[in-house]
Length: 384
Ligand SMILES: [Zn+2]
Ligand SMILES: [Zn+2]
Image (cartoon, rainbow, N blue to C red; front, side):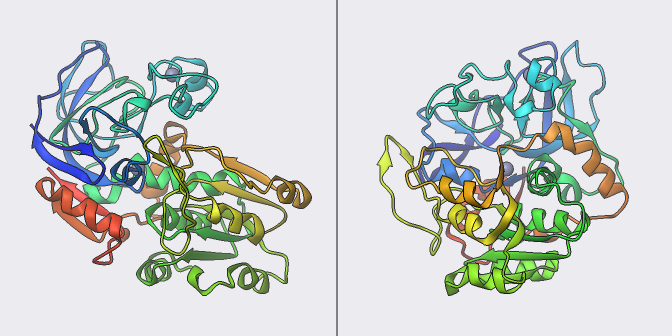
C-alpha cells in the first residue's frame, strides 16, 4: 500500500510499505477514505520528537472496515467508522476511569513518571516509538487495535469531511472548554486560531460563552476565526494583548484562557531555546500570556503540546491569582459520543476549516504549506 512515511525532520515521503495485517483477535483493518494532517504531526515533522525508524504518520483518519479479528463483536466488513487518536484497551484502570490517553496496556514505553523520552502515557496512532510505535492512518490501510473500544460507526447521512475531526481536533477543542467548566456567560480567550483553537472557539459558543476571543499572529487565521467561529479577534503581534483583553473585561481578564498553541515554535510567539538531543524545547511564552490574560480565580486549559521541563514557570503568579490549570491529551473516547450527538442536532459545523484537499501522493506538499503557514493553509485533508 501507499503511505506517508517520516524519515527525518522535514523529510516526509509517500512510498510503498507492507500492508497491515491482523495481529490480535480484537484488531481490525481499516481501508482509509479520508485522513488529515494535524498540528501535532508537525512536532514530528520538525524534529521535536525523536524517531529513528521510518514511521507511517497520521492519527486523524476514518474509513471502511476491511477485515476484523475473530474477537471483534460490534463491527463488520463494510462498516464506516471514525477512530479516536489514542490507542486504548478499554479494560485497564485508566480506560475505566475515563482517561484512555493514559491506557496502561497500549504502550510498551509506559510509566507513571512521564519522562522526557520514557514512561510516556498510552499509545497514539502514528506518533513515534515513544507512544507505542503504531503505524498511522495517512495511508491506504491501517491496523486498528482494540477495535471493540475505539472506532465509532458513522451514519451515511454525513460526508467524510463532516465527521473526520471527531478523531482529534473537535474533542480536543471541546476538552479545553469542558475542563474549564464553561456553562454560560463567560469570556473565553483562545490562544491560537489553528484547527484546535477554532474548534475550541466553536465549542465555547455552544456552551454559552458570552464573548469568545481568538488570538493569533497570522492575519489569515484571525480572519478564519472571525468567519467560521464568529469570534472577536486580537492580533498578538500588536503587543498589547493582555491590556486589550483586560480592557474588554472591565479590567479583570478573561474567565477562561485556552492555550491551543503549545510548544510549537511560532513566529512572533517565540523565544529561541536550545536543542536537547533531537528535542526542541519550544517556548512557553503563549502560556505566560494566558496566565496574565486570565482573571483572578480563572481557569487555563492547556491543549497545545508541551514536552519539556521549563525554567521561569510562573508558579507565583498562578498561586497569587488562584488559577486552576487543566492540561493533557483529550480523552476522545469519553467525549466522542456526546459530540456525535452535537452533529446529529446540527449544533456545529466542522468542515468549514478545511482549506486544502489533496491526494495522498501530495502529502509532502501538504506538510510543507501547513508547517510554513503559506497558501493560507489551516487544515489539510488527504484522500488515499
Ligand atoms: Zn491531531
Ligand atoms: Zn487501557
